[in-house]
Length: 148
Image (tube, rainbow, N blue to C red; front, top):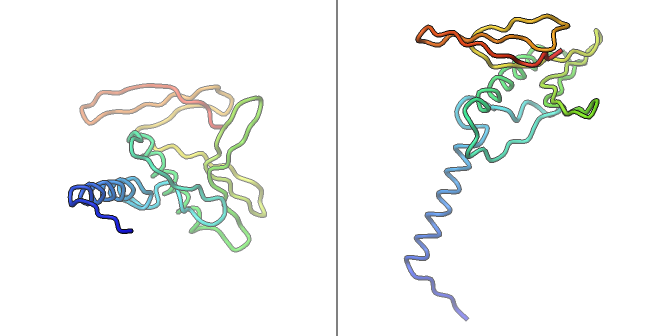
């Protein structure tokens, strides 16, 4: 028994495979700008995935988290540990802790924000204010949850 596929079917299959490969490369964490959110290391790294329609602000956040995790990893000693993207549940809500450093001095939680501008807030404030000035000189203000 032999199968014969027409040249049009073979061409269509090749085009579909090429599209899938291109989409995978363009949306992988290793394309453009480093690890981008996965591959921080063996202790607590987050898995990559398909991000074909991911908004730019999420990609920017992942790039910021990856840059900070890489910087922290470079500073750690042999007995210090970094855990990234740890999901926790408390009081019926979920949160993700970007970086947790454990060493002889204690446990440190580091929340990463990849914002342009500056953030103002106190330890006990429920929300902090975020200010961003555009290249045109317009300043925008919004609120962010207190990461503490």
